Length: 183
Image (tube, rainbow, N blue to C red; front, side, top):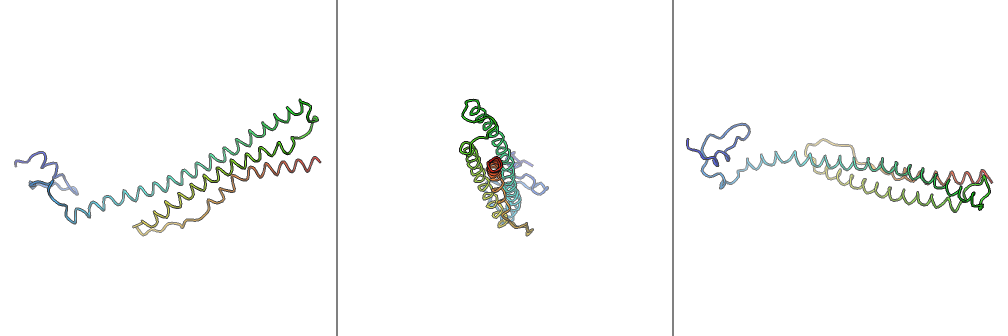
């Protein structure tokens, strides 16, 4: 058996069986129908796996953005409390407000407007993530070959938009409560 290294390389085992016949020149051979079918079968799971990974990644990104968005809103709300306290103390020490008074509504509403702007930005980012997830999921459903059905896509991400706006609404309502109660 006088086989070259090149001929041995091109006669590598396929499906666990080695080809013991010498090949003439395997680089010039055209693939047969069964070869093409085998390539398609081997490539199909990898494509499906990648699609599932993309859908999971989109869902994961949306979940992480929601977590970080709520954390950011809580942090901004906390910072606003201390900024408002500092402004109020400065106004009281400067003699512009009597001791024991509350921060004037026009000064307080600036922080609430800022909270609304941050909530709008986070809500838009969440909407974009949900749109991307729905797009990936619909492509995955249309390309499914296994016949296994998945739960339909629902618009449950819409509550996320309202979640961010709860913070400025609570801020505004608490300010209105203070104004009504102390008048």
